[in-house]
Length: 368
Image (cartoon, rainbow, N blue to C red; front, side):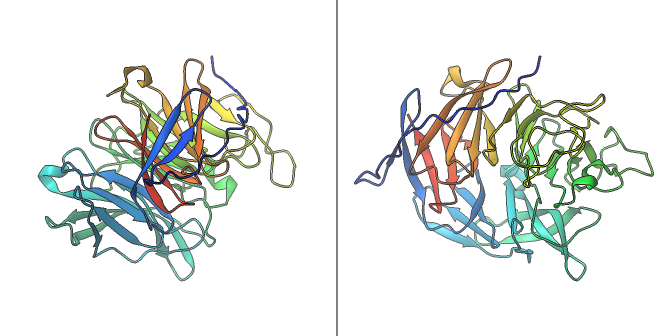
């Protein structure tokens, strides 16, 4: 049975930054400390961990920064030109499991398509040993048809257990395109490391459908992660109410804009209601909308009680939500001065929680 639980505002007071720079944050369950790791970021979007402890951070304006284990910082050269407009720019970052052997990384970005259009694209590049530059750049994939405007690019990257890549793509502000399988808009894609469609994708071999599509009917999915079993989950922005967490199934239709929880920004009804045969229901949704973005599903490393728990950043209400259980429910809101517009949340190599605050321009490590 699915859960359609409305989250309550817990009214947690924000804390004042401590003299040492660590910032206390609290929840309805416990207290934490947010330790700043990298400050001075402008519109940070994603981060990832290299095996040696170096952390890479993307900024939407087109910057890739490396924070070394000794605390020093380098700007990585050699990035492609990105279309910086609204929600578009340099976006997600994926450091694959075999990085030590191949030194390849993947990023998503808004790519100029035509004179005024742009669309979500996936870049593969090799990172130099000294972290100074990217080489062998190749855009391995871009959506079929870009559009004008700066809304709803997606876009998260997740490495599946079989080495393929999941890519989330927004509907670019054109709701009906999410039901059009001749386009990539409003979908979760599955591609190889060369940007091709695997043969076992649900629409491979269909001339009238895009073979990279894994699921569709999504609005603007900005969070994606595998759970400890390898199952892909995605969170996505609704309109006014109805932000969703979805368990992603091969070939499934998640309904946007035919069904949705929430209403249009002018208060009118969306589509046909909240349910329709052949369309998936969310495992959880928020009303009012929290504007969910980065998400991690905890492995249990260092904290077995958190195994399988979801941690989701809120851009609107400035907190990190923890969800768990069957049915899925929000059980904790981690909130403080550090959690202003949380764009990305990830589990670190030691099982700790890390997050990016857009409002503070800072990467933090969260410590109980």
